[in-house]
Image 1 (spheres, rainbow, N blue to C red):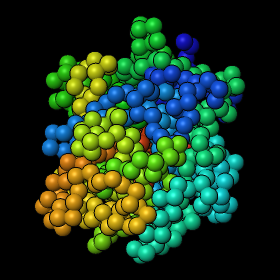
Image 2: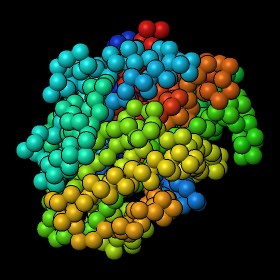
Image 3: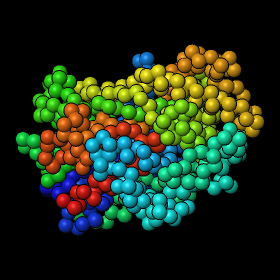
Image 4: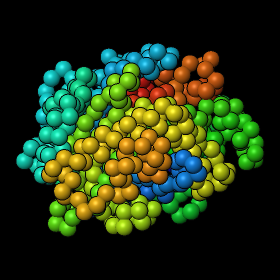
Length: 513
């Protein structure tokens, strides 16, 4: 291919937004590379991608595995198609809160303070419910909240139970001060259809002559002259290797693939790279480090036959709240799960002795534990080793033990508990015992699938930082990272909207340069 002005690696939440915004100038030639398939129209898009009622975690996936705790490994879904994880996820369109971004600013990244990022959150959205100083209209991603007449019956019961438990009523979970129980904001136009960045951003950009979308092309490494990036090496759809040149390279391949590409390119912890026979270009120990994710668990039951409609969305109402004694605003989320298919979770299926469960799930939004991602091989087809290292601190265990008790108490509500045939593992005696409940948390723990921080932003004198606040890779020229991996700390929300916002923010800087 001829030389491009910008080469964007990864057409996911951030990458699709970035490529679409960069290509708004017809004089700027943009190439968007995607390892998975590209579905150019809604008519061509598979039903499981359009169906927002359930996550798609197998067909269009990288099939990563992650070590979660105590050497237990779990599936670790990441979307492999245009739209990335926005095309396969739970359609939860939540924002971080002001304290998240003011923390980013305090870590040496003042351009990411709350007042700086709010305009980009607004720009990406077409909010169908609110038109005020905190929301935008006319953006590429529609956001709506579940109406009362659209909720499954058990969601109404959960909402009332949460109010009785003392949680405030919330109309808009994306208001910066909102805390309590209310309908989940969702990236969809209607009750059924998942609306990804491929549909929103790429849908409006596909007709541009200056934008090329190249799918089925997996990036092996970045090409350099000295420390200046000038393109990438890819494995093309035919299985051959080719080089593609560009004046600027942006990695937007996500918190797993972006650091892996950097390491295969010689940027990362020098000892790890040498062990794999990779020539070291830059010794950056932070590449793959500071891996943060949201751990989740809860209290679950096997539903009685006929008590749920499998066509209902599996999530509709949520609680955002602060854990007792915590100074982290909204560091817990509770969800009422209408139904959850255990097909891809054989261990849980065995414990439940059933294929479907329902219940109250809790997700810890601000864990102290930190993991790490390392290359297992220099071979681009070999997945990296992902160690989430959940529950590495006593505080993380305590918060989840207490939170599971809250899940259990909410599950005792008439209208919820009588829909179940039996609890999965949990019992009254277990809930009363901290040690036993701690074992339950370890056994039942899973990931929220929100990895961040593996190429985190920070100042040049921060040895663990990989990019500066404008997302330029330290020690290089013309190389950027623009996805969830740059987050210096995790936001207390699902990460899809923040990843899109990062793409929007970087696009502004690049177009102004």
